[in-house]
Image 1 (tube, rainbow, N blue to C red):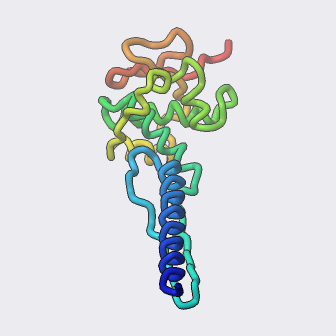
Image 2 (cartoon, helix red, strand yellow):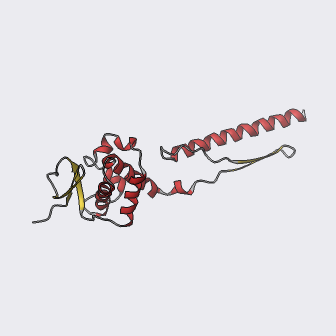
Image 3 (cartoon, one colour):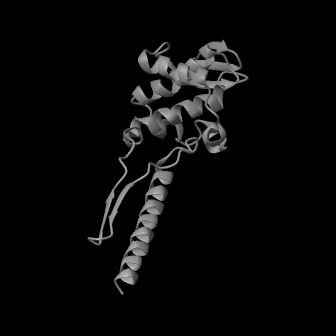
Length: 185
């Protein structure tokens, strides 16, 4: 009888550990960015059969995933890649500046995600290209350079092929035509 009870406790403890591990995996999987496919950290499990005890030490959360700003920076990099992935480092930096300058402007929303997802602004958000963008090292470099110090603080608009009908045309770089805010008369 004692052997059966011990076996049942062991099986129950293992089932509990498996369920806890699966729940932990689901939680980690939901918080990871799509490009991160790392397995969740293992939990420490101690089973003392003679005392009928099970101790589970939860895995420590990854502190990097707890920083909401990282998601904003990743979205910025994905947008720059989708918009300017075929452009030079300079072109990528200028696209990053347009987004960051809008965040700083009272004329636009005040977060990176709100600027990028604003209706009719960044076509790569609305057509899904951002979700498919594979951010390169050069694009990350461009984003980090502009986060450290803005190269073009007056840029607010860009388009492919020609200048937009609003804003003040400034300069063509690669396929993009950049503009500043329209000056008040």
